[in-house]
Image 1 (cartoon, rainbow, N blue to C red):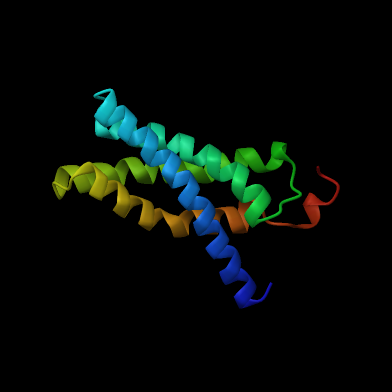
Image 2 (cartoon, rainbow, N blue to C red):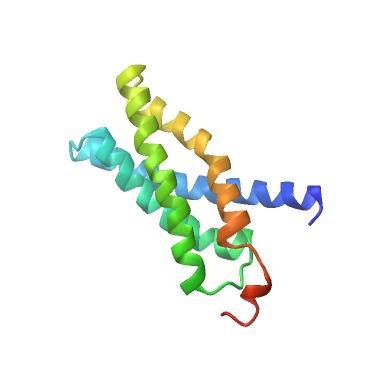
Length: 136
């Protein structure tokens, strides 16, 4: 794939990620502001919802993956769970050490993790390879 093709795919990934992020933030706000949940719990729940939305959209619209769900979904969740660990760590650091508002902390965390998620999914989760042939 050419550099311009990779950049276009990254932009599609970012757009799909924006949809997942909207789902994430909607649940975060509903839990924290509406239900009185702790911000960290809201961030984690929002992250899980956003991951599910992102998997479905990225598989089809960004990577057009032919890798089976049995292969891709566990890989996606390994990348997502590593991102979840980073989310919990960064949210805690931003809120506890830097005393940032939870929404500011979440925006910074989301921006930092965009490249992590793209690289993990492009290079491992949805990557086409010889072992994928016939595995549908």
